[in-house]
Image (cartoon, rainbow, N blue to C red; front, side):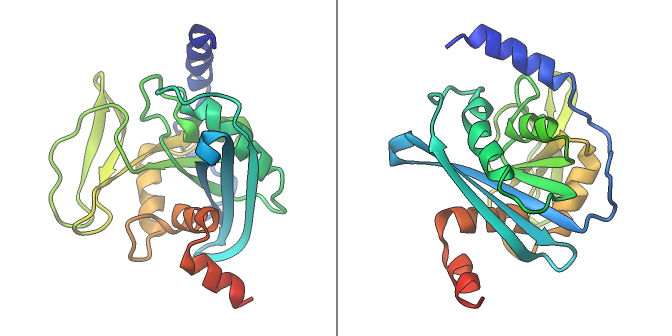
Length: 222
């Protein structure tokens, strides 16, 4: 594994990430959600993609791709491990979202290329990273109230927002993936909340990927 070459590729790709708003459709008609996990002790990579109608946030399409994992887990290089399955799931979609949420980091990454920035720039769709844990950067303490936020800073640059989506829950780390500004990223995450810790696009992607009760109920009702 040539990490020096991968690091160089990250820096080159990060330089082409668009950090301003560049939407084709506004407001978006369809919002996607992506979630990646691993099965069989990491041997299989599973990517789930969902499409929700906006503003109803109704699930209209879902796809799952399972492929053999092509790379071991190496901190800071996770996107290279997750991208092949995301691409496989993306190719199955019958319609493309106008905006995509990815469960993971966008530019809030040491080399500014988390999975949301990496995948968003590959498919060239406006993309937002919504991560559950900090990868890098510092932030001031958050107020316990839902809606409280602090900038996530690294090397003198704001790379995301730390945002408390729900009381008594750990905050989310929201960042630009591609073609979405930091402020718009947070705005659209807020616009896609329905009372849970996660925004609906990534919550549904996780539900589909893991066969959670909400998804099973949705399937049985069809």
